[in-house]
Length: 182
Image (cartoon, rainbow, N blue to C red):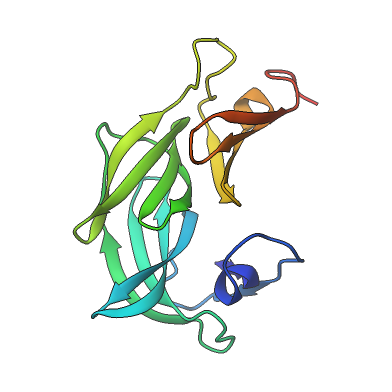
């Protein structure tokens, strides 16, 4: 698995070229990871940076990471993490942080908002559309990322990229023509 330098060294907006380091033999990095989110938490009462990874079936794993340590950025495998959802999901595609303690996941064309629940995360909200218009619904496969108070959604089945305000969910922009390749 490749981990972008920007994640391990300085979480935040991508304002420079991203380099990737390969960790082929690290036993904690599982093949099939489709999404990852890096956030701050406490481990044994002390501040720590962790990376939550999820596979397409929603199986999640947590690793303690060390930002800035180029020789050993992967510190400790913290094990499997339960991801509790209201209804089963078939195909998870990505993770992103909305705010401290608020995780976003994309699966089956939905954006799922989650909060901490013991050692895991639990769903509190799910959305697939943002108005009553037939154009304002996600396709079956989306990927997400967040940056500077914005949620970016790559809606490949409907051939577009959408941008939403993270605070109020309002659509700010749409790029491309819905349902028209090109």
